Length: 417
Image (cartoon, rainbow, N blue to C red; front, side):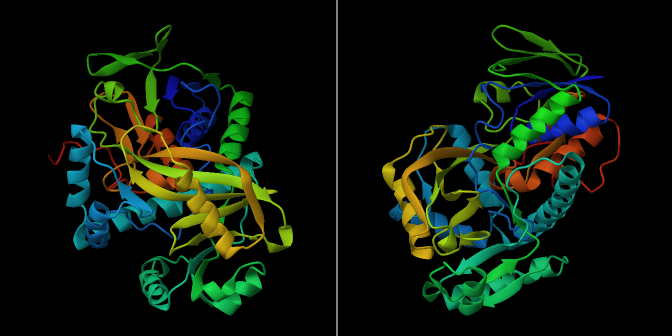
C-alpha cells in the first residue's frame, strides 16, 4: 500500500514513521523547503502531559470580554471580516460551559497521556536527539490566590495518576538558583512533564524515516484533491499529481481553498503565537528545566546554549504579522524571572500559527472519503499530542484498532451549525 502524507511538521513526520514501520510505502509532501518549518519550528518546546485543560471554559467568556476593551492582553482578539472566523468563534463559545469543559478534559487527558508514552517508546527505539529534558516542568505563580486555585485544579490530573508537587518560593529557588524567587508565591512542579526542541526532533526523525524508505517531496504545495466514487485518487500540486492507495492529511492551518475539498468538517482556525530564542550568557543563572510563568502567560525552555521564550494568543486571521512589542514582552518577562541569564539583543523571533479547533482537541480519523485520514488540529499542544496522534492514524490506515478510545477526538460526522 502506498500512502501520501500531506504535511512535514510534527504530525506528518511522526505519521510517516509509524506508517513506514508498519510496512507501507510512504511519500511526504509539503510546501515548505524544509521539514518542520511552520507550526513545528519554534514552539514552546514543552510536552505538557499534566496540562490537558481545554481552552474553552466558563472563565474564557470573561477573558474574551476583556479583550473588547483592552487589547494589550496576552490573549488578543482582532476583528475579522472572514465568516469562517465567526463560525469558529460560535463553536468555541458553545464549548465554554462547565459540562463541555469537563467532557473535553477527559478526552484530551486520555490522548496526552497516551502520546507521552508513545513518544518515550519512539525515542527509545530511534535514539533521536533533540536536547530532551526529562527533569520536570515548573508552573510558576506570582500570586498566592492563583497558586491555590491552580493547586485545586491540578487535583483533576492527580486523580488520573499524573504526579504534581506544590512548592514554596524557597523550594523553587533550590531547584532554580538563578530565579528571582522574591517575585513568586510558589509553583507546581510536574515531574513527569518534559521538554525539547520539536523542530530538531522532527528533522532527526525525518532522517530516520528516509533510512527506512520514506520519500519526501518538499517545496511542493498541494492545491487540490482529485476524488471519485467516495475515494481520493490523487492530490495535485501546480506541477505534479500524487496518486496513492491511501492519504493522510497532517497539515497545520489548512488553506481555505483546499479545506473545502477534503470532505470533512475541519473547524480549524489559526491562533497566532510568538517566540524568541536568545543566547544564555550566564549558565549559572539560567533555568535548568522548562517552565511557565502563569501570571505573564509565557513559557520558557532551555535548549542547550539557547533559551526559548514563547507566549501570546492572538485571534487575527491568517496573517503572520507582528510588532516589536510582541517579542519585547517576552524578553521582559523572562528577565524578571531570571535576571542576567540571557541576551535577547539578537534573538531569533518567530510568529507561529497554531491550528486550533473550537474544542482544543485534534481531528483524527476519516471524513467522507474512505481512504483519506486526518491528523490535524493539535493547536497549542501539537508537540505533546504528536506521537500519540500519529500512532493512532497509522493504526487506522492499517486497519488496526487504536490502543485508546477516540471518543471526543474524531472528525465530526456532522456540523453542530
